[in-house]
Length: 139
Length: 399
Image 1 (cartoon, rainbow over the protein chains, first blue to last red):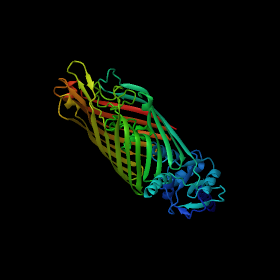
Image 2: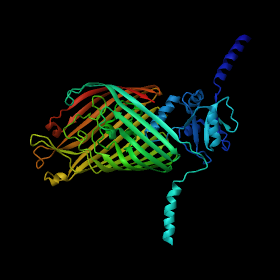
Image 3: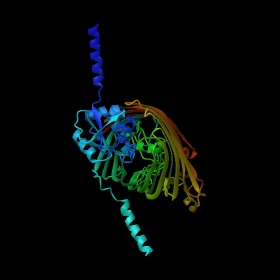
Image 4: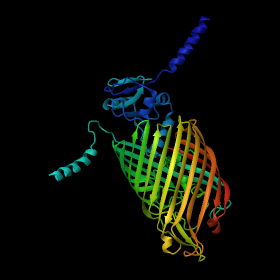
C-alpha cells in the first residue's frame, strides 16, 4: 500500500513539475510594477493598450516564432498558439492596424532591449540570467 | 512686431510637431507578409458571357505587403495584389502610403488607400476573409471604389470605449464591377453585363475627385458600429443608345453618393456577427442637355449579414447578401426618346468552412445559391433571370 501511495505521489509530482512555468516575464528596472495580470500582458503584447499605469509607453518585444519560450508564453499568457497570434497580426497589418512587436532572436537580445527601454516588457526562458532587468509575476 | 512673432510661431510649431523624442533610440522596424490564393470553382449559370465557363482552376490572387517604420511616428506601407485579371500595374497597387502619427487621435497620411470604408472592405485580402468569395458589396466595387489616392486624416480616442474616424480625399478610378476568381463570376453575380458598363472598357477609366469618411464606435473587442460615406464627382453611369441598331455608349457627367452603416459583434473571438447596409444614388443632368429627360437619378442599395464561429482551426460561416445597383440608362428610342433603366438585383445565401491548421495554410470551401431578378429595361436588352449555384475551394498560403 505504501508503495502504491509513493508511486502515485511521484506521478502527481511529475505532472505538476511538467506544468512549471518555463518563461519569465521581465520589465525595465525603472518599472514600478511587480505583478501583471494575463489580461494586461495580453493587451500589451497585442498592442491593445499602449501605456503602463504610470503613463510610460509600452514597448513589448517578442521572440521568433520558432522559440519554445514564445510557444509557452503565447499559449499560457496570451491564450493562443503562435500561429493564431501570427494570423492576428496578419489581419491587423492588412487592415491598416498596428504592426507586431519586434522579434528578438535570443534571450540575450530581449534582455538587452528591455534594459535599454523604460517601458519595455519581454519574456525569456526560465533559466536566463536576468541581471539588470526586473522579473515580474504573471497572475 | 506682432506679425513677426506670429510668423515665428508658424514656422516653429510644425517643427515641434514633427520633433522626435531623442532620449530613447528607435530601431527601424520592417514587416513583410503576403499570400498566394489558388482556387477551383464551379457554377451552374445557364449562360455566362460569350463562353460558357462553368469550371475554373488556377491562381486567383497573390498579395504582398511591406511595412517600414524608420521613425517611431512614421510608417511607410505598400500592398500589391496581383490577379490574372489585373489590367495593369496601376491596378496592382492597392495601397501605398506614408503615415505620420502625431498622436493617437491624429494621423496624417498621403498616398493611395484601400477605400477604408468598412471592415468588410478588408475581405479584399484573402487571409482576412473566412470565405473564398468577396461579399458583393465589395466585389462589385459599385457602391464605392476600391482605392482612393490623395490624403487621409485618421485617429481614435478612448480606451475601452473608442471612437475611430478616417477621412480620405483624392482621385479614384471610375470603375464599376471588377471581376475576380477564375471564371470571372465574382464581381458579376447579377449577370448583367451590357456593353459599355464602366469597368468593361479601359478608355473610359477616368481619374476624378472623390472623398470618403468613416466614424465608428467600439466597445472593446465586443462590439462596434460605424457610419460611412463616399461621394464622387463621376458616377459609374453609362448611357447606352440602342435605337440605331448599334450600341452607342456615352458617359454623362454625374455624381455618386453612397451611405452605409455597419455593426459587428465579437464574443470571445469565437462567435462573430457582421452586418452592413449601403444605399446611394448616381445622378446626372447631362441627358437633360441632350433633350432626353429631366434629372436622372438611379438609386442602389445592398446589404450583407454574416455569422462566423471560430473554433481556433475551423471557422464555419453562413452569409446572406442582397445587392441592387442601377447599371445605366438605356434609351431605346434614341437619346431624345423614352429612357429606360436596366437594373438587376441579386441575392445570395450560402456558407462554408475555413480550416487553418497552421498559420501558413488556409483552406476554404464555399457554397452559395444566387438568384437574379431583371427589370423591364434589362429584359429589353436581352438579359435573363437566373437562379444558380456557385461552389469554390480555395487554398491560401501565407508567409
